[in-house]
Length: 158
Image (cartoon, rainbow, N blue to C red; front, top):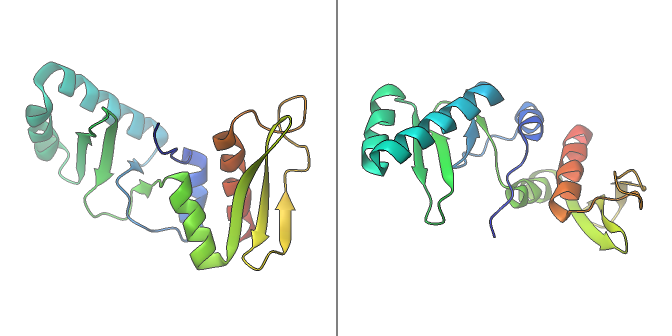
């Protein structure tokens, strides 16, 4: 079990709307750059082990650091430049909405899967998925997929 990170598209829109919390995870200047960096890191890790891999990245990517979490998850993060596109977990972005924008964003279950709603923190409903999901019941099969759409839609509201 691991935290779900937001998508590249959601991270990009969140940055445009003011999300600037440093996170362990980031996308490079593009999704392709991020994918390349992680691929290179994995190749170096498999070939040389973590210590040699870190030395390589410290020398060749001075603003970027990478590592492996205890569960084997590969991560990368920026060492201080704000040009990188940070991408938080879904739960951190939910907290940002609650604390900065007084919005409560959630995914909830029903008999067909998961739907999403966006409310103000005082309970006023602002938006919901209204059976717009991809499965036959008009909802999403996975909680995380429904929440991702809700987060993206919430960003568009601010």
